[in-house]
Length: 253
Image 1 (cartoon, rainbow, N blue to C red):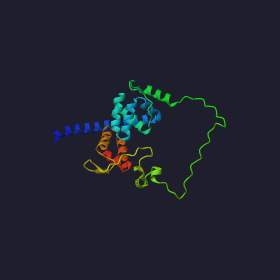
Image 2: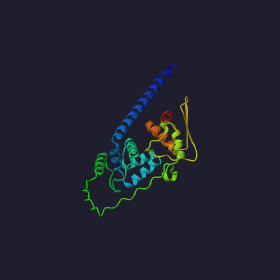
Image 3: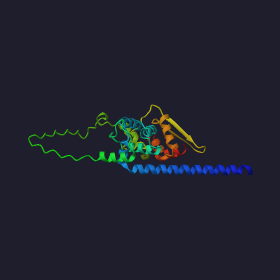
Image 4: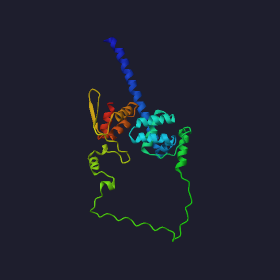
């Protein structure tokens, strides 16, 4: 028994060091993300300015489909950024969508300082003199406003672009499980995907028709690189669970 004591102590020391390193890495990653997000739309414009038009379209296509990990990989390859820098750039582009105003296809990627200066230049439109007012005889007569429908007429779903049944279902979800107004609606699949995770003492399950193998793999990948909060937010967007339930699930991955 005494012979087993030193190896056990060494094993416990190594485990403690690993846990400390993981926590430090997570804190640094979160601090880096908070700093990047503090830049707001200007930081998103700087990240967008480092891309060509094809790269810009490819990244936003992946973001629209919820493929954040693939978008990070494309951004890293396009700009030679670090993993954390690419992660921050994709989250900025997702939160503050940017039209393409970047570089040409053959131009070298800009560094962060050059991209910020380019974004500041493009975000300040040059002032142009207002044209003189047209003579009264040449002014166009404004078209009459369309008549408002009677108060007892309810517009159809085709006319409003809204689905009352889907809105009713969304209202029954808890507030923390509803997507934000500016979040893209995830795709719904014709089947319910079941994800189960356990640590031996506790077993949690999520069943959703907005999950599949690819999306669940991205959630696990985010958790494995220390972005537990981003993984929980992604799981919450693709299911009907609350953010606290999503965090508990990700903690077991």
